[in-house]
Image (cartoon, rainbow, N blue to C red):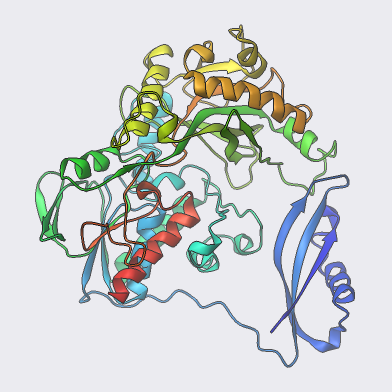
Length: 515
């Protein structure tokens, strides 16, 4: 057993190990000669009041205590092992493949998009020329949506699996070890591609396979057991275990499952706008005026309110970040946000979204699995049309939106394709717009200075999670009707971010190993 103790320090002391050690020893009532080792186990910022402090959890091992070491990831040779198919190379798919190798199975990964290097060309096209490649974009391709949308690793899903193991694997493949300590770990869009590439290379080195530009287009089931998959409307592959980790935007998979009479269900999701402030303003608000402190990182925020029976909350807040175009098909506009590792851009952006359940939607039919997806698509297409049928987005200053005024001009935005001034109250459905208006006023009461006409709303923020779930057996993790089919990750409704998706990938392969 180790000894844990909590201490608080001023930010400028965070590099002073002697000071931290002495303070922690005093708090733990220990002497230096009584311990064999120590470390900072957790680190978080306490900005609830001035002065801002860092909360540190310090772990000590006394001289008679055994210090547990991290177990490194070990590659097994799986060249001749039993094969399993993994559809999708996002966090769920990659971690499923890594767990398969660890467990003595050979993963064969099929990814509809391109590798991380080739993906960059398509991201440049959507940003500069407004051209959407439906197979390679911010959502589809090696690493999934997480590769080019920030790399935030925070999760509340502690009960779903081993969070530390998922983080340790990231470190093994090149992430900074600080992600094991920080309360809200973050890698950064600029660093993720190298890590994702290292994971892919390890999978291949062990004997696994990774196939890009390989889209699942059909599958065969015999006596409720999956037996084969079709790729690119062409070649068939025999598999009796298939991990379906296609992500929250692979709508064609939902339609394929429905056409094959495989059960899917409408699922609550969230929709709203992505708001952008100057990062200096958010720093000033959150750090109580101490916004020039060089020892503090760019500030983040988390906001939530209940408005007329529905939750309104901040989503994927990106300090020092950029708003990106994340459409996955023609005739739609979608926004998301990301930050580089240093979070050193002058803007802070966040999704501000309204929770939407199937029963909230007009004309909802209880047996219609597409009611939320259709609502999502309707908003995305309307935004595309009103913004000129390009990847420019409808935009409005925050107070103008609340007061129903069309903005006459805008501060500079990080959204590269450009913005178009509209009245978002005429674009967003009333159940969304009216709640956002009330929420912004309340958020301004919580964060003095947040409610400002210098903040710009970009619409829509619509891909917060999958609007459809693929039901599975809670014990075997197989689809409730098809043996050997493992709905996995965000696209199936069982995750909400990089780490929870990675954990679900591990869990699905654990279920295969048990079987």
